[in-house]
Length: 178
Image (tube, rainbow, N blue to C red; front, side, top):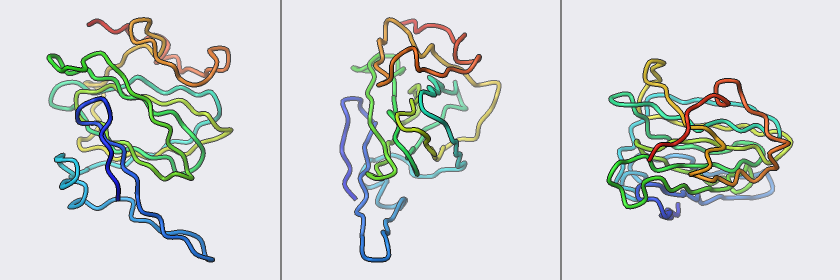
């Protein structure tokens, strides 16, 4: 497993060692001890989620507030997505900055996003199956978000605006307020 830091402190790209042969492939998708040693983060996850989406779908930017904040370890099982993390930690050197990582069913990379970040992704392939682990359970009352097209953040989602498929909920999220 190779762990790579991103420009946002606490966010990591995790590249597994993939073993292939005539039968297909095998890789260890998660090992708590290796994860904790490499990232310094708590590798205790309590909830796994999965979604399927089609080309142009943009999900996010989402986060949970307060005691219900969530760290996420995300990956793509099938297809291609551009995964986005936005630093919302007051006082952070990278507050208000974002990073985008292309995750695919072929590269098998994972992206670790700690608590204090907004998260979203756009689907770049015809379809995509997206999976993520969370270190805290979902609580509707703590749910929050930021507009996907916030001009201050100026996120490049990797797809033309005319092709974006946005949920009603995401279309009315508030703008980022630094």
